[in-house]
Length: 319
Image (cartoon, rainbow, N blue to C red; front, top):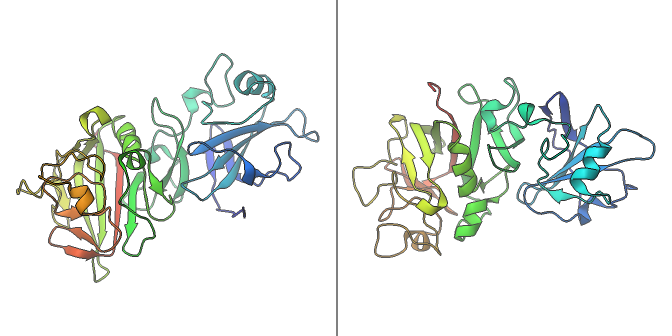
């Protein structure tokens, strides 16, 4: 595995996380051999020449592109490490920092941001760790430059993407792609984030002539899996046209359940997700197709020749 310095920096509870490759002589050896489950793995280890300092190593594997990050603590946390990880100090996915019988270095009161709106103002756009309420840590891309920043990116796609969007229900549920390029955050994670507060959504569309258009909906929510991850949208404003809440029931996306090639929840006699090669909130079938490998569609703006798409969410400004 080759290590790439990403330029990431995230402050949490007075500590700063920056990329750092572990020393080759660390007791765990080559980090490329590490067992990774989920998005984030937390490692704690002691170096003989740094007692009693400990390092909290976090390995980002945002859907295939792995990098290491280090949180330097200002106090010994050996007791917490042993109680949380066991005496062998093995590494496990998504260690709940600040929980358990012994508090970790990051108490819940000043924990990870719950979404990108809680990332410090003035931060640059990039990859961040968030922890929605009641959920483990996840890796997201935060857009900090658009309309006062604080947007969590839940989807990004380009016409020439290498990503195959014709994925299964479980793959869509937990996300896929590359968080820095084209990706789907995960339908379950989108639901978990958007249930924390009242959210808004922005769709950003690049048409065939490279013009950028947007569609804002002042309310955005996704119901839980037992309700099919049904989409709920509010009022529209923007320049792209209101393609998500069409008056035509055959091309409506608002109030629709999510469908994939192996779970048909649309209103069509056949499976729209299977026929049109991508999961989405289909009716029978669509006026918007953004989860697709090739030219995308947004209403009458661009039918099968949109060049890129971006879906952003953040808490509604009036709440």
